Image (cartoon, rainbow, N blue to C red; front, side, top):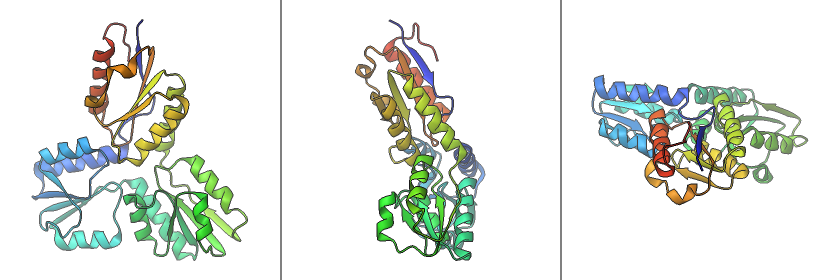
Length: 286
């Protein structure tokens, strides 16, 4: 029996991640040192370690290691954190994903217009915390059940963590209908995220086993794994090829591979090559 490896039509690093990595690598080569990132630049431990080898280290606060260059993480930071970065460092590079910035701006506009602002996303996630920081008084909600504990105003506005699913957004909107006089929803979900999720579902439906590559601390990668497991119970979420086990692929004819938005192509290629070695290179197609 031969096995075929198929990669999802949409998989791997998005524009915002590639942009941030280019900025970090250029800073490591030519920037004013030392070079730091304010929090992990992206949610991918393998890439964070690679940047550390290049001399780009992570700090949890701007005051931790003042001086030199600091990059603002892709997930964004609060205005307070950004001011602290400018006050303590010679150079500040904003690696915030442009789509995250769009969510910040949308939340700010809603607050200015008097809406009770809800941010649909994972409480405590850096992106959600940054959006809340840009919209004083905004409230994070993860599920419609959270609404029971919130005193909603007459006007309610909604923005969304960029890596959320539209299914979650539809559920929240349905729950809000009838609870306020005016509801305004600004869909700030990244289109690349939606396409990646749709492609993952299609891949999983056609596969005997699916391998999802990306950091376990990555919200969008975790969501991909959840989606894939719905269609293919033999779904495995890994961070690197070293986690692969040959027993996973027993009897599998169609092997699917997808990856989160923080997973570079080199990491995907490494996993595909490792799977090929485990199942035998003859008859394996990519």
